Length: 488
Image 1 (cartoon, rainbow, N blue to C red):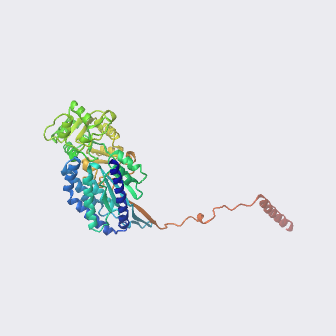
Image 2: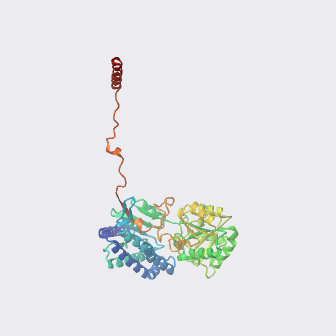
Image 3: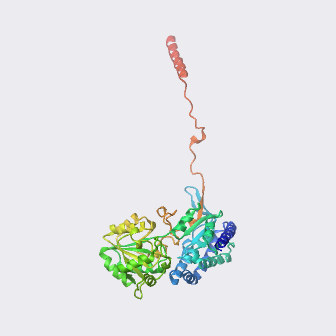
């Protein structure tokens, strides 16, 4: 039966990609007005379905909080659309009169979109919008544990698009999900580009196909709280961000590094916000519970509430506990809890000054979040800029939440649910991925200066006179001089 399901999945992919390719041939000729009309309808349909799909995603996956998933769906639809609404994606998108240069948008074709189980519906909204805005077709391959809700999100977008004039087949979702089907989608000859969001293995698989791929994997985000910070705000933001959707966004805080002079105060303020500080026995229980023997994260605790995680680990927490805070001193392989934890467990470190805080932050990043995100709470601009200049990440967030700041809801970075980690993180870009990453740009260039004269010759240097010719000329001149003297 497993073989039959694989074959059915592969065949479904082939049918969907063929239909998508045919639809793209029509959609690639759409005008900017047609593109924008269709995308506006899609965004509104997604926004209206946000609550229903948030509940569906939580129920199907068991991850997170339905109300928070509703907010992410609203972000992935209306906020993302607002960010790309005025972006030119058809015809001449830029003109430089001085250099006589025109830039012309060119779509890629069929986008293969791999969707994670942690943010299935919001990521489907987001990827579909940016693909269609840049005049591409899209075939979605959801995580098996989120196939129903992701396909429902894709159907919401597809119906809105078709009702507004888009061709049928432009947006589709693989319903018979299998590894073989996903591999067929990524390797299909008519797949133009892969947009992969999820675990490290999946991202590596996307990059190994030989296709252009935007592959973004996990983050391990440290937050440094400096002695110059607004401590009360920092405590409130960190706890709320870590608890948001039970820590299923990859930019959520994973470790607090507190400057020693304010550490005790920050700890008490975080406790007041719902943080439970674990003792050594409870911390050890969490190490055993959160991670398997091979170092991988225990799926059963991903996206779960603090009380649930504590109970699985064998201890109880007071009512109202939002996150579990584990005091640590080590990082890397020696400390499993220094790694990414897609659940309501947050590491706690103390540092003596911002320089040590900087070093500890880098150690956390090197433990699994290279290129992703760093957060700093401070008012000292010297310290803030030092973090900006020195951290090996491509998003440094200042005095905001990790969960919502990195994706662009509470900051000025591009709204996105696919966050590049750059070359140091194994990604082709450090950008927040959006519509302009899914189109190529042609250059129409007029002459701005005449070519050098040398290009019009054959390139050979004329030969000089031979020694015999020089001797003949010299003798002739001498004879002429002597003759002149005799005549005088």
